[in-house]
Amino acid sequence: MTNKKWAVKRITVNLAAQEADKLEKYCQQTGRPATDVIRELIRGLSISGENKDVAG
Image (cartoon, rainbow, N blue to C red; front, side, top):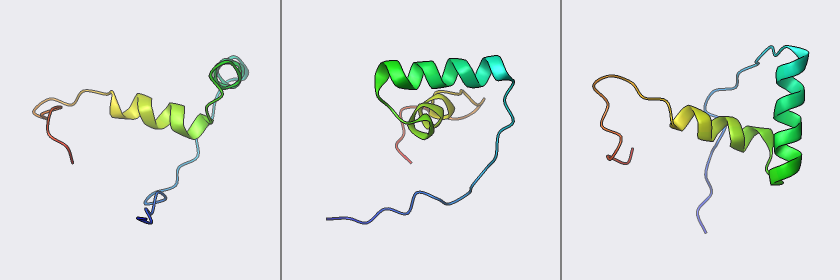
C-alpha cells in the first residue's frame, strides 16, 4: 500500500457566509469532504499552455 503525502501546501480560504453555506450543503448532499470538493475544482481549472490530458 502506497502512503501519499497530501499536505504539500496548506492554504486558508476566507469565504463569505453564503459561500461557506453553499459548500457545506453541497458536501452534505454528496457525502464528500470540503477538501475533496475544492481539490476537484482546482484540478478542473484550465491554464493556458497546459495539456490537461497529461497526468502529472
